[in-house]
Image (cartoon, rainbow, N blue to C red; front, side, top):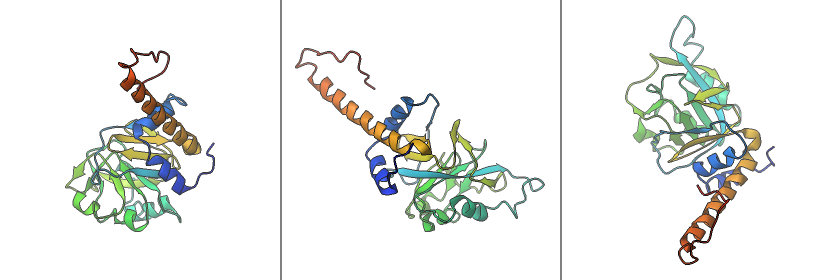
Length: 226
């Protein structure tokens, strides 16, 4: 269970570790895959971190998904609720990773509502404009064509899957230049502590490796290096 850290402390802790640290920490608790690779960012160098809210897209079909009802604006507001600050909007394409899910105009809401950013398995338009906003984004790459003819926003705050990784609303997203990792919301504080311990262990291993020649290869048998 989470130990009740505040959002600022969690953010500070997350910025001191990497996705790899978290994947190792999660691997000591669970067997499921939790990481997503192959992501690009219009905002490289920034860290994306926060609790997930989700929008699931669906193949466009006016007969089954009425575009007058299933529009991004209404589903966005449903997803983020009354307290949007610091959340991560997860946009799932449901099998259309080459399609744009938004650009500089539509995603202006992410900036103005104060979300930490966006994670999607789809593409994003208008990288240059997105870089002027205060949020962080990770996606499958840049697009130049709008995606509305192919996929439509369908449901808010439902479980989604990105690249085989399940994401529940309230799970935490951590993404950096190496990829993204999804952390169960109820375990966020313990996993952050575990990832910090992993990072400290690695630092100790590096010190030992640096001293191996001087100490005639003193053994670290039984300990796990990564």
